[in-house]
Length: 218
Image (cartoon, rainbow, N blue to C red; front, side, top):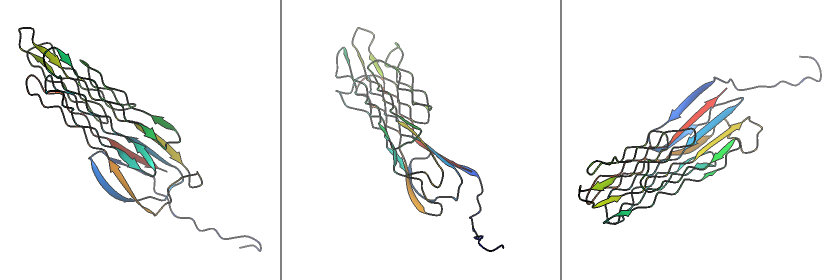
């Protein structure tokens, strides 16, 4: 080595990607990286039942990692009774991303579940046939569809559909503000799917879809 030169020691980087799509809490060691991208979806809310005295379906869980948060969408309301329509769920909120922070979409009465940003498709609303259930949202993050009550004699009711979870994306180099440090232990959480609304009479709502985290590094 020539005089005045410094020796630099760098950690080896092995590029890779890892996906977490089963709801739960995980402990991970951040890999060494030149760049790292984190994408996250919150869980989707469940669809309300055709008639369940106004009870709400389950909320989607929040997905969190590296000070980022993709919150879950809430569940839709079941029909209150004779010729009533429940309200849809409320969209999940996105915070912390330096590329995208996109809130989910709200649910609505008598509708398909909300689609997730860059994610899954909302479950279909129940059909016009007798006591048709709503469809399940697809992963990641979509809401469940509205359930239908119809006894064939004009006594009908509808649930509100589930809202979708938010979407967050961040890109870092080691020098980016807020970047996770290679070799550190981090806790991440994948949001659960919102449970479907169960009918007192009529068809159930559809279940929401679970959240997801994708980590890619080079």
